[in-house]
Length: 127
Image 1 (spheres, helix red, strand yellow):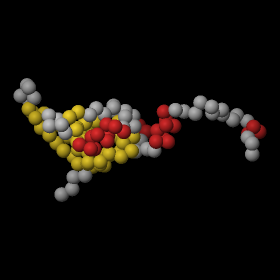
Image 2 (spheres, rainbow, N blue to C red):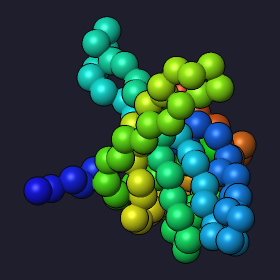
Image 3 (tube, rainbow, N blue to C red):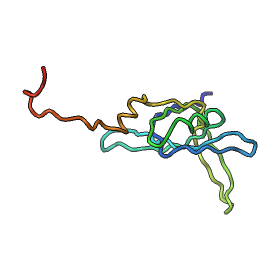
Image 4 (cartoon, helix red, strand yellow):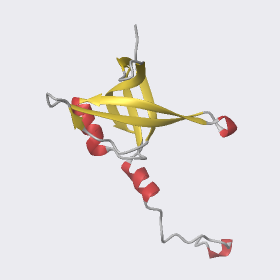
């Protein structure tokens, strides 16, 4: 059987690293993935979970709004709440996270060129 997920989207918030009682690094994060175009466009918000070195890498190198590629497996967990109601969550357990855009692309999105002057007349072009 196959259980493999690949997502590419933007982080909805900064990743916070926690540790279990035994010191194992873990983090949860949400990836916003767009589907469709125009009036049919919608965004899915997909919960992800990372452990150990993957969690540390994600925490150290990714921030809110950044494009991320997540490879992992789909997992469903259940637990009983304080009210006795059974709760379910389906999430992606990340085995690997990668940069979805180059550092150069990220810098351009964050810092637009301030010294750009539009050319309104073709006669002003140097060629």
